[in-house]
Amino acid sequence: MAGVKIQKLCKTFWINGQEINALSDINLTIEDGTFVTLVGKSGSGKTTLLKLICGLEKSTRGNISFPPPDKSINCQPERVSIVFQEPRLMPWLTVEQNMAFPLIKEKNRERVAKTVNHYLDLLSLMEFKDAYPAQISGGMAQRTALGRTLCYDPDVILMDEPLGALDAFTRKKLQADLINIFLLQKKTIVFVTHDVDEAVLLGQRVVIFEAGKIVEHMPVNLGYPRNPLSRNFLNVKKKILSLIVGENFN
Ligand SMILES: Nc1ncnc2c1ncn2[C@@H]1O[C@H](COP(=O)(O)OP(=O)(O)O)[C@@H](O)[C@H]1O
Ligand SMILES: [Mg+2]
Image 1 (tube, protein in one colour):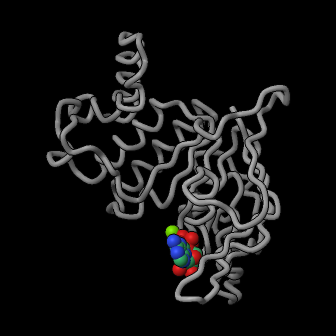
Image 2: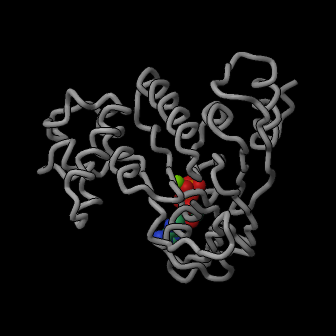
Protein backbone atom coordinates (compact mmCIF):
# COMPACT_ATOMS: atom_id res chain seq x y z
CA MET A 1 0.00 0.00 0.00
CA ALA A 2 1.11 3.54 -0.67
CA GLY A 3 -0.18 7.03 -1.27
CA VAL A 4 1.18 9.62 -3.67
CA LYS A 5 2.91 12.84 -2.63
CA ILE A 6 3.51 15.47 -5.30
CA GLN A 7 5.56 18.53 -4.45
CA LYS A 8 6.15 21.63 -6.58
CA LEU A 9 5.82 19.61 -9.76
CA CYS A 10 6.35 21.32 -13.12
CA LYS A 11 6.41 19.96 -16.65
CA THR A 12 7.35 22.03 -19.66
CA PHE A 13 7.15 20.78 -23.23
CA TRP A 14 8.73 22.47 -26.22
CA ILE A 15 7.06 22.45 -29.62
CA ASN A 16 8.98 24.23 -32.42
CA GLY A 17 10.81 26.41 -29.92
CA GLN A 18 7.57 27.33 -28.15
CA GLU A 19 7.31 26.64 -24.44
CA ILE A 20 4.19 24.84 -23.14
CA ASN A 21 3.72 24.74 -19.40
CA ALA A 22 1.65 21.57 -19.12
CA LEU A 23 1.91 21.58 -15.31
CA SER A 24 2.98 24.44 -13.05
CA ASP A 25 3.68 24.08 -9.37
CA ILE A 26 1.44 21.10 -8.58
CA ASN A 27 1.19 20.17 -4.90
CA LEU A 28 -1.04 17.20 -4.16
CA THR A 29 -1.06 14.59 -1.42
CA ILE A 30 -3.17 11.51 -2.02
CA GLU A 31 -3.57 9.43 1.10
CA ASP A 32 -3.00 5.72 0.99
CA GLY A 33 -6.21 3.80 0.16
CA THR A 34 -8.21 6.78 -1.09
CA PHE A 35 -10.04 7.34 -4.36
CA VAL A 36 -9.28 10.70 -5.93
CA THR A 37 -10.67 11.97 -9.21
CA LEU A 38 -9.01 14.64 -11.36
CA VAL A 39 -11.31 16.70 -13.52
CA GLY A 40 -10.65 19.51 -15.95
CA LYS A 41 -10.95 20.63 -19.54
CA SER A 42 -9.01 18.96 -22.30
CA GLY A 43 -5.39 20.18 -22.29
CA SER A 44 -5.39 21.09 -18.59
CA GLY A 45 -2.54 18.65 -17.83
CA LYS A 46 -4.33 15.60 -16.38
CA THR A 47 -2.71 12.97 -18.60
CA THR A 48 0.69 14.59 -18.16
CA LEU A 49 0.33 14.30 -14.39
CA LEU A 50 -0.52 10.57 -14.60
CA LYS A 51 2.42 9.97 -16.95
CA LEU A 52 4.76 11.70 -14.51
CA ILE A 53 3.41 9.68 -11.57
CA CYS A 54 4.02 6.36 -13.34
CA GLY A 55 7.36 7.40 -14.81
CA LEU A 56 6.33 7.53 -18.49
CA GLU A 57 7.48 11.18 -18.56
CA LYS A 58 10.18 12.98 -16.59
CA SER A 59 9.33 16.12 -14.63
CA THR A 60 10.99 19.43 -15.39
CA ARG A 61 11.08 20.26 -11.66
CA GLY A 62 9.60 18.96 -8.43
CA ASN A 63 9.22 15.66 -6.70
CA ILE A 64 6.88 12.64 -6.63
CA SER A 65 7.07 10.04 -3.86
CA PHE A 66 4.97 7.10 -2.74
CA PRO A 67 4.72 7.27 1.03
CA PRO A 68 3.61 3.98 2.59
CA PRO A 69 1.31 3.94 5.63
CA ASP A 70 4.24 2.54 7.58
CA LYS A 71 7.01 5.09 7.03
CA SER A 72 9.79 2.50 7.39
CA ILE A 73 9.31 1.08 3.88
CA ASN A 74 8.99 2.95 0.60
CA CYS A 75 6.88 1.78 -2.32
CA GLN A 76 8.79 1.20 -5.54
CA PRO A 77 7.49 3.03 -8.62
CA GLU A 78 6.96 -0.33 -10.38
CA ARG A 79 3.99 -0.97 -8.09
CA VAL A 80 2.18 1.87 -9.83
CA SER A 81 -0.04 0.84 -12.71
CA ILE A 82 -1.97 2.78 -15.35
CA VAL A 83 -5.18 2.01 -17.26
CA PHE A 84 -5.68 4.07 -20.44
CA GLN A 85 -8.80 5.07 -22.35
CA GLU A 86 -8.16 2.25 -24.84
CA PRO A 87 -7.74 -1.24 -23.37
CA ARG A 88 -4.36 -1.89 -25.11
CA LEU A 89 -4.78 -5.67 -24.91
CA MET A 90 -2.55 -8.10 -26.77
CA PRO A 91 -4.69 -9.35 -29.68
CA TRP A 92 -2.98 -12.77 -29.84
CA LEU A 93 -3.80 -13.57 -26.19
CA THR A 94 -7.18 -14.57 -24.75
CA VAL A 95 -8.96 -12.55 -22.05
CA GLU A 96 -7.54 -14.89 -19.42
CA GLN A 97 -4.01 -14.75 -20.84
CA ASN A 98 -4.10 -10.96 -21.10
CA MET A 99 -5.09 -10.74 -17.44
CA ALA A 100 -2.37 -13.21 -16.41
CA PHE A 101 0.30 -11.38 -18.42
CA PRO A 102 1.75 -9.23 -15.57
CA LEU A 103 2.30 -12.47 -13.61
CA ILE A 104 4.31 -14.12 -16.38
CA LYS A 105 7.39 -14.47 -14.14
CA GLU A 106 5.49 -15.89 -11.17
CA LYS A 107 6.61 -19.50 -10.65
CA ASN A 108 3.58 -20.60 -8.63
CA ARG A 109 1.15 -21.07 -11.54
CA GLU A 110 -1.56 -22.32 -9.22
CA ARG A 111 -1.51 -18.98 -7.43
CA VAL A 112 -1.65 -17.16 -10.78
CA ALA A 113 -4.70 -19.20 -11.86
CA LYS A 114 -6.40 -18.43 -8.54
CA THR A 115 -5.75 -14.69 -8.84
CA VAL A 116 -6.92 -14.55 -12.47
CA ASN A 117 -10.04 -16.56 -11.68
CA HIS A 118 -10.84 -14.23 -8.81
CA TYR A 119 -10.83 -11.19 -11.10
CA LEU A 120 -12.54 -12.98 -14.02
CA ASP A 121 -15.34 -13.65 -11.60
CA LEU A 122 -15.39 -10.19 -10.00
CA LEU A 123 -15.49 -8.49 -13.42
CA SER A 124 -18.08 -10.91 -14.90
CA LEU A 125 -15.64 -12.16 -17.53
CA MET A 126 -15.55 -15.87 -16.68
CA GLU A 127 -17.77 -16.80 -19.62
CA PHE A 128 -15.42 -15.01 -22.03
CA LYS A 129 -12.10 -16.10 -20.61
CA ASP A 130 -11.12 -17.99 -23.80
CA ALA A 131 -12.22 -15.22 -26.17
CA TYR A 132 -9.70 -13.03 -28.02
CA PRO A 133 -9.91 -9.20 -27.84
CA ALA A 134 -11.39 -9.00 -31.35
CA GLN A 135 -14.28 -11.20 -30.20
CA ILE A 136 -15.42 -9.13 -27.21
CA SER A 137 -17.18 -5.77 -26.75
CA GLY A 138 -15.47 -2.52 -25.79
CA GLY A 139 -16.79 -2.80 -22.22
CA MET A 140 -15.46 -6.33 -21.82
CA ALA A 141 -12.12 -5.29 -23.27
CA GLN A 142 -11.89 -2.44 -20.76
CA ARG A 143 -12.85 -4.82 -17.92
CA THR A 144 -10.06 -7.14 -19.11
CA ALA A 145 -7.62 -4.22 -18.99
CA LEU A 146 -8.77 -3.42 -15.47
CA GLY A 147 -8.47 -7.10 -14.52
CA ARG A 148 -4.91 -7.17 -15.86
CA THR A 149 -4.03 -4.21 -13.65
CA LEU A 150 -5.67 -5.80 -10.60
CA CYS A 151 -3.83 -9.11 -11.17
CA TYR A 152 -0.59 -7.14 -11.02
CA ASP A 153 -1.72 -5.99 -7.59
CA PRO A 154 -0.29 -2.46 -7.68
CA ASP A 155 -0.27 -0.14 -4.68
CA VAL A 156 -1.46 2.77 -6.79
CA ILE A 157 -3.82 2.53 -9.78
CA LEU A 158 -3.86 5.42 -12.24
CA MET A 159 -6.77 5.62 -14.67
CA ASP A 160 -6.85 8.00 -17.61
CA GLU A 161 -10.46 8.38 -18.75
CA PRO A 162 -10.81 4.59 -18.78
CA LEU A 163 -14.57 4.66 -19.38
CA GLY A 164 -14.59 7.55 -21.87
CA ALA A 165 -15.10 5.38 -24.96
CA LEU A 166 -17.96 3.28 -23.55
CA ASP A 167 -21.71 3.64 -24.01
CA ALA A 168 -23.72 5.04 -21.09
CA PHE A 169 -25.02 1.64 -19.85
CA THR A 170 -21.67 -0.13 -19.93
CA ARG A 171 -20.11 2.89 -18.31
CA LYS A 172 -22.59 2.78 -15.42
CA LYS A 173 -21.87 -0.93 -14.85
CA LEU A 174 -18.12 -0.32 -14.81
CA GLN A 175 -18.45 2.65 -12.47
CA ALA A 176 -20.32 0.37 -10.06
CA ASP A 177 -17.66 -2.36 -10.49
CA LEU A 178 -14.93 0.14 -9.73
CA ILE A 179 -16.64 1.30 -6.55
CA ASN A 180 -17.02 -2.34 -5.46
CA ILE A 181 -13.38 -3.08 -6.12
CA PHE A 182 -12.33 0.04 -4.27
CA LEU A 183 -14.49 -0.85 -1.25
CA LEU A 184 -13.13 -4.42 -1.25
CA GLN A 185 -9.45 -3.63 -1.76
CA LYS A 186 -8.95 -0.03 -0.63
CA LYS A 187 -6.28 0.63 -3.25
CA THR A 188 -5.08 4.15 -3.89
CA ILE A 189 -6.87 5.18 -7.09
CA VAL A 190 -6.22 8.32 -9.14
CA PHE A 191 -8.93 8.56 -11.79
CA VAL A 192 -8.95 11.17 -14.56
CA THR A 193 -12.16 12.20 -16.25
CA HIS A 194 -13.63 15.25 -17.94
CA ASP A 195 -17.10 14.15 -16.85
CA VAL A 196 -18.09 16.02 -13.68
CA ASP A 197 -20.83 13.49 -12.82
CA GLU A 198 -18.33 10.66 -12.98
CA ALA A 199 -15.82 12.60 -10.88
CA VAL A 200 -18.39 13.16 -8.11
CA LEU A 201 -19.81 9.63 -8.38
CA LEU A 202 -16.42 8.01 -7.79
CA GLY A 203 -14.07 10.31 -5.91
CA GLN A 204 -13.70 10.84 -2.18
CA ARG A 205 -12.04 14.04 -3.32
CA VAL A 206 -12.29 15.82 -6.66
CA VAL A 207 -9.23 17.78 -7.75
CA ILE A 208 -10.01 20.44 -10.33
CA PHE A 209 -7.43 21.30 -12.98
CA GLU A 210 -7.27 24.40 -15.12
CA ALA A 211 -4.43 25.23 -17.52
CA GLY A 212 -1.81 23.13 -15.75
CA LYS A 213 -2.75 24.22 -12.25
CA ILE A 214 -4.91 22.86 -9.45
CA VAL A 215 -7.71 25.34 -8.81
CA GLU A 216 -9.53 23.47 -6.04
CA HIS A 217 -9.65 20.32 -3.94
CA MET A 218 -13.28 19.41 -3.33
CA PRO A 219 -14.02 16.76 -0.69
CA VAL A 220 -17.08 14.60 -1.45
CA ASN A 221 -18.46 13.58 1.92
CA LEU A 222 -21.00 11.09 0.59
CA GLY A 223 -21.07 7.32 1.08
CA TYR A 224 -21.11 4.77 -1.77
CA PRO A 225 -23.08 4.10 -3.89
CA ARG A 226 -24.09 7.67 -4.66
CA ASN A 227 -27.30 8.94 -6.11
CA PRO A 228 -26.54 11.47 -8.89
CA LEU A 229 -29.98 13.02 -8.41
CA SER A 230 -29.68 13.61 -4.67
CA ARG A 231 -29.48 17.16 -3.42
CA ASN A 232 -26.03 16.71 -1.86
CA PHE A 233 -24.64 15.21 -5.06
CA LEU A 234 -26.06 18.04 -7.16
CA ASN A 235 -24.65 20.64 -4.78
CA VAL A 236 -21.10 19.29 -5.17
CA LYS A 237 -21.58 19.04 -8.93
CA LYS A 238 -22.79 22.64 -9.18
CA LYS A 239 -19.78 23.92 -7.23
CA ILE A 240 -17.39 22.06 -9.53
CA LEU A 241 -19.16 23.22 -12.67
CA SER A 242 -19.02 26.84 -11.53
CA LEU A 243 -15.28 26.49 -10.97
CA ILE A 244 -14.69 24.94 -14.38
CA VAL A 245 -17.12 26.92 -16.49
CA GLY A 246 -17.04 30.09 -14.40
CA GLU A 247 -20.84 30.42 -14.17
CA ASN A 248 -23.10 30.26 -11.16
CA PHE A 249 -25.38 27.21 -11.42
CA ASN A 250 -27.55 27.96 -8.38
N1 LIG B 1 4.47 14.97 -25.57
C1 LIG B 1 4.05 16.22 -25.61
N2 LIG B 1 4.73 17.15 -26.32
C2 LIG B 1 4.32 18.43 -26.35
N3 LIG B 1 3.25 18.91 -25.68
C3 LIG B 1 2.52 18.04 -24.98
C4 LIG B 1 2.87 16.66 -24.90
N4 LIG B 1 1.98 16.04 -24.08
C5 LIG B 1 1.10 16.98 -23.69
N5 LIG B 1 1.43 18.18 -24.23
C6 LIG B 1 0.72 19.45 -24.01
O1 LIG B 1 0.54 19.61 -22.60
C7 LIG B 1 -0.74 20.17 -22.30
C8 LIG B 1 -1.48 19.24 -21.36
O2 LIG B 1 -1.83 18.05 -22.06
P1 LIG B 1 -2.52 16.79 -21.38
O3 LIG B 1 -1.77 16.46 -20.15
O4 LIG B 1 -2.63 15.74 -22.42
O5 LIG B 1 -3.96 17.38 -21.00
P2 LIG B 1 -5.32 16.64 -20.61
O6 LIG B 1 -5.01 15.20 -20.34
O7 LIG B 1 -5.85 17.38 -19.42
O8 LIG B 1 -6.23 16.79 -21.80
C9 LIG B 1 -1.42 20.39 -23.64
O9 LIG B 1 -1.22 21.73 -24.01
C10 LIG B 1 -0.69 19.45 -24.57
O10 LIG B 1 -0.72 19.92 -25.89
MG1 LIG C 1 -5.82 13.47 -21.27
